[in-house]
Length: 217
Image (cartoon, rainbow, N blue to C red; front, top):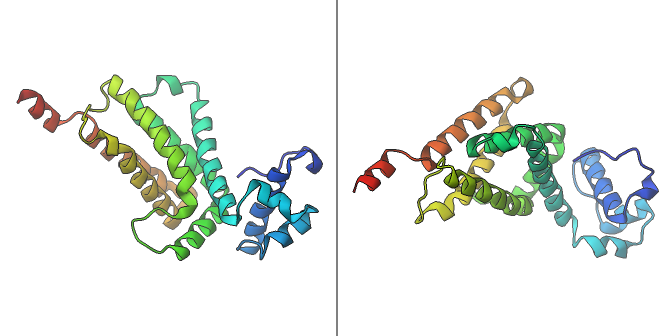
């Protein structure tokens, strides 16, 4: 999440102030505020102002993660060569940009995911904090894969292709898990893992020997 801009604090909306104050508190304390009342009191806002924009602190966490994903997509798409990229390069560009954002926000990212997993410690399931991020990502990757089918970079497999966004979401979880454990300088192993994971995924969704055999039959 980006730090506050140079604009005067009073120029920010109550929602933006609440989100930024929550984010800063979690970074400094390592956990959410004890109550909504204490957070809004610190901001000089009535408690009801919080509930006009968020149901609880978990909703802020989900929105911050959605912000990470949106920033990654928008930043990657601003690259001059984005429109010339194929599906594989666009997915790679998104992942690399996302990791750069997470590097800037590593402490918060790891804290929020760990808190979410503590409440729902089931392996293989998406942490609730990533729910909004996941929905946006699956829409994003669905569009990229549709483009890939038009250019024949992605095989047209009508029976199973609707499941591809869920497959790529599992890849996102793999990348996040690898990033969380990576202790190399500038997270070099994460970059290498992204390259290998995306290469493998496009070996699977692209045209291969199986498609040639089906065409022949």
